[in-house]
Image (cartoon, rainbow, N blue to C red; front, side):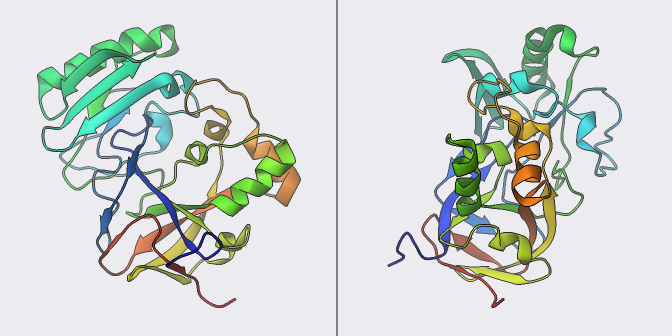
Amino acid sequence: MITSNEPHVAALYRYPVKGLSPEQLDIVDLSPGATIQGDRVYAIERHPGKFDPHTPRHLPKVNFLMLMRDERLAALETRFIDTSDTLTLRHNGTVVAEGQLSTAEGRAEIETFLSRYMGSEISNAPRIVSAKGHSFSDVPDKCVHIVNHASIRTLESELGREIDPIRFRPNIVVDGIAPWRELDLLEKTITIAGVKLQAFARTQRCAATNVDPSTGQRDMSIPELLQQTVGHRDFGIYARVLTPATIRPGDHVELPES
């Protein structure tokens, strides 16, 4: 049995629509060269027409609605049902829009609401986009994003307040390893319940982490705090899945020797 001070998976998340709220998961099936199933399957174009679903390619996040600039998105609570591709949006506990994203009519329901909700903050009518097999990650690679809860706690001690891990948009939150140990794992292999992952890049943090994920208020200065605390703005790592397996919260995390 894994104890709290041993390296383990603390939580799992996916983000069905880029920029909108996460879903916490109890189990995840990982496959080589893939993301978590259902992660960032959809995105909301800020300037419609740049993303071509027939020839999908990675585009910088500035092309889409996102928390770095569009913090009001954080106040929306979302629920996505895979079997029907239905997205439900709530604001202050009330359903404000619902639509089946695999249909033009369903997408229009969500787009119309977002256009009203964002108001003058966007100059064009937003468009929900997707393409089979495409993930709207911030990086071109299909991968997972790993965050270390111990590193979060060091920032909490500096700041004197709690920091929700969701500010860092993780797929996998690990705990029981030393603070900042994750940043030394580039090009090394991490093993979780039989899944082998290779870390390949640090995540450079932007102003999106300053947004409270439940209220949409900019109430922290995370990149600046990182710079002052550790001398850089990196927090979290991207990793490619090398072998297939199923992982759950509580699973043991095996790190390579230093």
